[in-house]
Structure formats: structure tokens, C-alpha cells
Amino acid sequence: MDSQDGQPERTRKRNAREPALFLSGTGDDYLGRWKRIIHLDQRLRSGDRPTLRRLASECGVVTKTIRRDFEAMRIELGAPIEYDAGSRGYRYADNAFAIPAGTLNERDLFALMVAENAIAQYDGTPLHDHLREAFDKMLAFLPGEVRDAHQVGARAIHFGGLPPPAIDPEHWTALACAIRDRRATEVRYQRGGKSKPDARQLHPYQLLVRDRDWFLIAHNPAVGRELLYYLPRIAGVAVLDEPFDIRDGFDAEAFHRGSFNAMQGPDEPVAVTLRFAPEGAHLVDERPWSPEQTVRRHKDGSASVTFHSAAHFEIERQVMRYGGLVEVVKPVALRERVRDTARRVADGHG
Image (cartoon, rainbow, N blue to C red; front, side, top):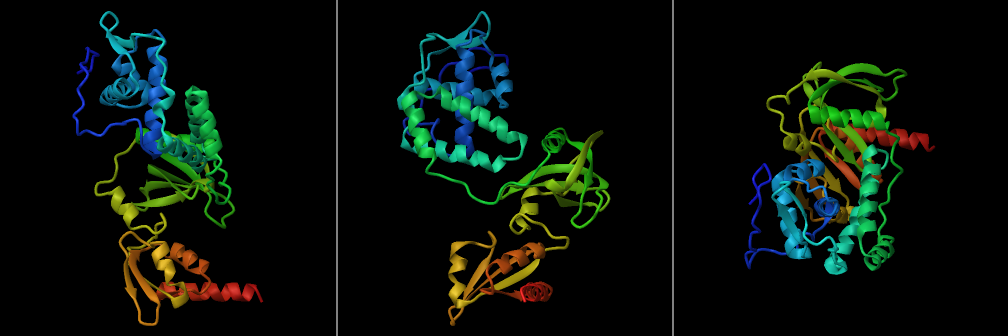
């Protein structure tokens, strides 16, 4: 096995019960593995004799991941990877090696199709162009018949929805770097309905994407809690030379667990009960409202869903979508809020 300074490794024999096809799979992990394999293949045939550390740094992973990639390439692709003691790096023993066309089966091609279309979720951010460029490089590397089959099949999948909102790429990049480096930021934030943005200092924790809408989860020292900020409303970002630590007691999983449709409310979560009319009771089965909801079936064919949330404004929006098929039972404040909104809608439509 390789050490951190790139000593030679011995290929581990696969256990007969160990799952094969490390290079198969679905989703982001699948795409990430193939992006690394393509990069490793190009570097191994470049003549540079790259070390494990160098390859891990270039791919943004640890050396253990590169070892696993090498093993997968040797076992599943037959790659003649060898260690060069003189340079303490790696190369192909036979530069004529090429990734075989049969490597990708139908399941792999389907995963590629989904992954390529999923890049659209990052439209409007600098990450979209980077992903598109990396994916195009990967497709160009595939054998012609595999690439043609993929391009035909990819048209069978389409990610719909509204166009993405406009996000300043420099703001997105500045916030992503501030999150990575744990640096405080000063942002100018345009609240809805206000004529001018106001300045506030934030400790950025995470970027959140929901239906191609991007939000910033950040600790606001002025109010002593974490809040959501809508990226299209950020009019300016300045990364400060001021490090910060994640607030003691902050739990990202708990933060998201208390949300509704990824949105947060200003108060503590309370019990929310929604009742679906008999003709809309099937909606309970089609789409959960919360991962921790409880459902009750009623004799008249209706159904009730109960969960905890503080994002009442977002629940109101979802209830209104169903045009009267969903009734808010509790809390009373949310029920009244939906009632008042429905009256305004009715008044506005004569």
C-alpha cells in the first residue's frame, strides 16, 4: 500500500464477496468517479510521473481515494498502472492502453444521462460552466459508439421548471470561498419591497439550492442566530480578513430538519395539521409534506397530516397551490393567514 510520500503499493486482491464495478453507480458520486478516472488516465499517459499527493491535490480528494481509483482501473479496466521508483510517481507500463468501450453498460449510460441533465440545476452559477466543461471532456474521451448512444438517450430526459433567477457569479464565488475558508463577509442585502439594500455582517455556513433557487445559510451576529438569505437579493459581497468558528450548538441536520420545503421561519417550530378533502386525499400519498409527518385517515375519505415547522409563509404558499383541497386545522395563526390571503386573491379576481 502507498504511504503519504508515494511509496510503491501492492494491489489488494478482491474478496470474492466484495461488490465489483466500483466505476458503476448513479448520481454525483458516479460522475465524480469518472471525472477522476479521466483525469488520472490523462496524467498517467502524460509522462510527468505524478505522485499520489499531486493527483489527490489535483482531484480535490485524499490519497486513499486515488489508491481506490487505481485499484478500480486495474481490476475493472485492465489499466497497466505501475510505480516508477526513480521519480516516485506513477505511469502506464503500456501507453497504448485505452479505456474499453464495453466499460459502460446500459445502467451506466442511464446514470450519465441523468447526471448530464442534472447540471442544469446549477445554471446561473459559475459551477455550471465548470461542470459542463468537465462533462464535455468526459464525453469526448468515450468511444464514438458509446458517445453517440449517450447523446441520443440524453434527449429522453428533461429537467423542467421555471427559468433560474439571475445570480451575480462573483457574489456566488465569493460566498463559496468564504464558506470554504471560514471568513466573515459583509453583504448588501435587498429585502423585498425596500428601495435600497442594507449592509450586514454574516458568517456564511452553507449554500442551499431548492428548485434552482439559491440561498445562503449564515449566522447573523447581530441577531445571534442562523438565517436564510436569497442570493438574487444580495447586491454586494465583501469577504473580510476575519475568521469565524461555527456557532457552538449549531447542528446543520437539525437546522434543515426544522425547515419546510427548505425554508425556515423566525420562531420555534410548532405542530401544523393540514386536512385534505376526500377528493384530494390522494395528495397525501403522492408527496410527503415532511420526513417526520404523521398521517390520519378519516371516515369521510379525507386525510390529515401533522408535522412541526416554523416556516408558515412557505406552508401558506403550498396550501394555496391546491385551490381549497387543503385546509389548515392548526395553528390558528396560520389558518387565519391562509384565510386572509384567500380573501385578497378573491377580491383581486372580482
